Image (cartoon, rainbow, N blue to C red; front, side):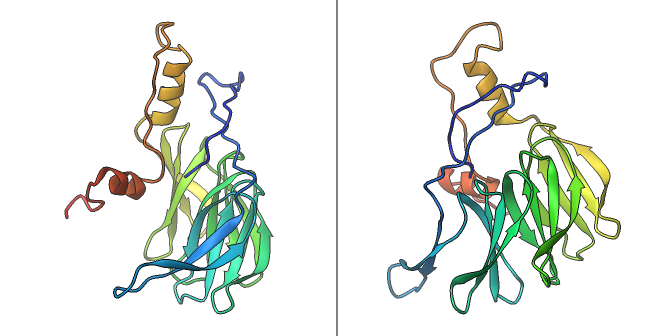
Length: 220
């Protein structure tokens, strides 16, 4: 999901902070025609912000919202015309985006500012910025539209945001950040021995399952 780049260590933290600059040359969204009777083809290329990294579509299928990690914006694409009709400024390093079931708000995780931006889709503006854990990446809205859950990569937590108050009301401790552990290993942070190779599965969970040929549904 996030582009590869130089790593820098944030000395104010006890662990290595990996800052992976987004690729400035990537600034398009490809729209594909999918047909069972023919090969899938790209039939439209839409120019958006720098380093588009995630996309969400509203429930009625009229607009797409693209998180642009390199320009700190969200592009709103009119799916009738396949053009950008609004560019919304969010916080530093948007990484993922999700639209609520009612289609009234979108939520963008902002990796470098440790926040979630709530975007009012009627006005195309951010009307609330919510502080979460360190390094927020993935985000989902529950089916009832009452809570947002986001994963915090460096904090090894999940934040639950109460949408009635737009505040975090629960922080859940989960597993350790794999990427950080690999970087620490390559940097010789463990035992002073630098290994020759580090392997990381990148992308969200469903992408990793697809790349490894595993079912994304654990019950499937």
